[in-house]
Length: 171
Image 1 (cartoon, one colour):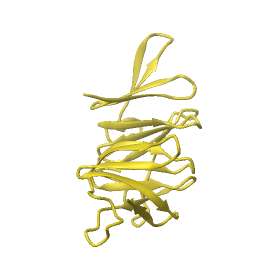
Image 2 (cartoon, one colour; image 1 turned 180 degrees about the horizontal axis):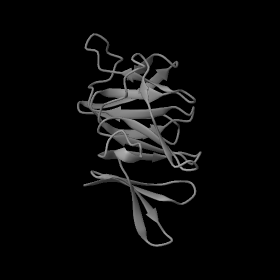
Image 3 (cartoon, one colour; image 1 turned 90 degrees about the vertical axis):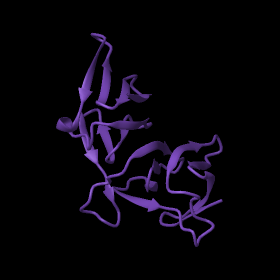
């Protein structure tokens, strides 16, 4: 399966597939494949996001990587509250907001990597809190032209009303 495609700021095209991450080589019109052996947390790549700094964010079935094109290396991100565990859940969507935070939609809630951060924070549905997500299965994310984050869940949309770096309120 092909799950997605992204182009980095330097014009390099990457393709997300069930068999790894593929980088198009325009000089010989071939694809270079990246896999677990190259540092990916998993070979099934489901979401891609090229950021303004030239990095490629890679969401897989088992977690999140960032590809540094200058070193051709992958970095793996971990949970904030369990620093010895890798972030291991199906990534469905990746978006950055104007404050530089990376938002990761998954089948287990919404995660955020604050700008400059190294640990992921999780936001989940809480039946006792009407300002939480409507459901933990996040299917897609949208950042509007006005910079508002919308979260599309299995039970409908939610808009991020506020986030203070630790707590989020959705409506």
